[in-house]
Length: 103
Image 1: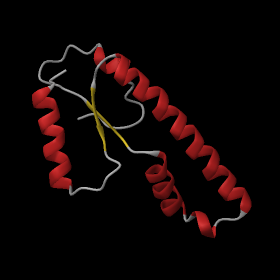
Image 2: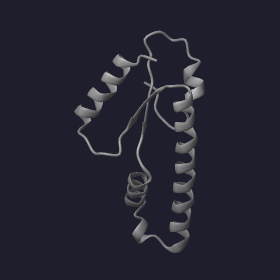
Image 3: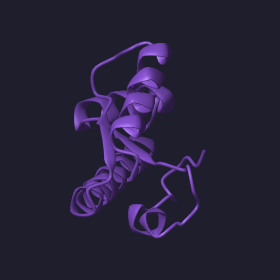
């Protein structure tokens, strides 16, 4: 398993490792902002701290937009995880995705 924002879709698409499908997960801006604000304790931060969080959030959203464009262009597996689900349900969706579209 590879995980993280450093796993760029175009690089993974060139891999020739057998039995190694990929799935990109994304969530909408509302969810990403809520997660980032919660984990950073945004409401408790001074203005300078909120400014940094806002900049990082904007960077993260831009990255996701570009990443998903490449995922779409290369017709790679993608799941939108905006709606909450249990870890078991998400694992099953990922497994179904790679079984249906092995990449």
